[in-house]
Image (cartoon, rainbow, N blue to C red; front, side, top):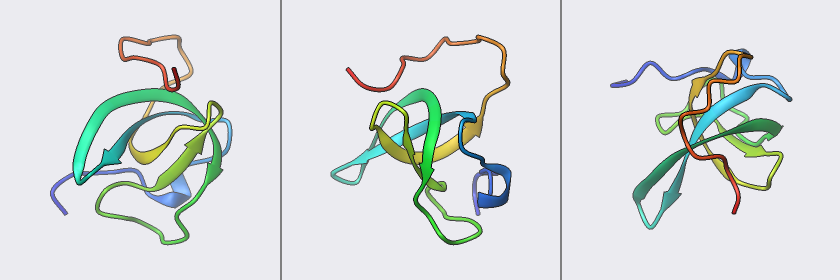
Length: 78
């Protein structure tokens, strides 16, 4: 595995994460949001554990963000 991505066990509902949406096999821009639903059943996934955010965005988790309001990246939705 090339990246050190969070595993399913490290992700919880309500957690703030950075996701990337896959669009026609091209990764999109990273978005930050709060996890509503964890969609991947496996322990890990090469593109990141797939989640649905509170604003209906779905994507693979690339990073877990601290609770502080450090929001340099665009928010999901819109």
